[in-house]
Length: 96
Image 1 (cartoon, rainbow, N blue to C red):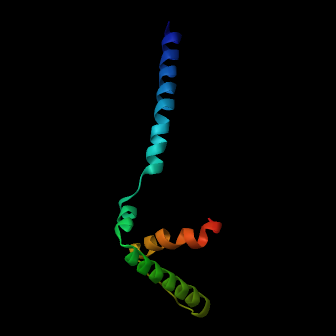
Image 2 (spheres, one colour):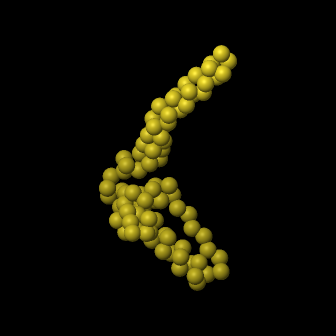
Image 3 (cartoon, rainbow, N blue to C red):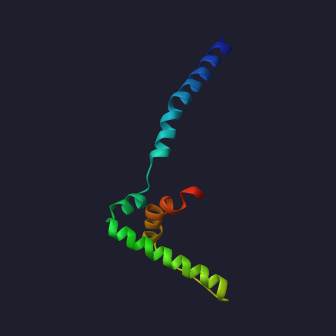
């Protein structure tokens, strides 16, 4: 009798996990952090401007690394996220 009860508990746990796992996976894959939603709220002109700033600073950073003994760069969240939203897929889709 004890083995039958144990089997039903195990079977119930397996059925529960198998029935809730797809919902959990869907929630994890569809979740967007607030900072990504905020980038979507920027106007296209603002996004393009921030994206251009990021690209220019990245190129300058690369040149500084090659040519200078000391280098540094500071990027804002808006610049990085705008570049990811605007340019990553259009210019680097083949490398992703």
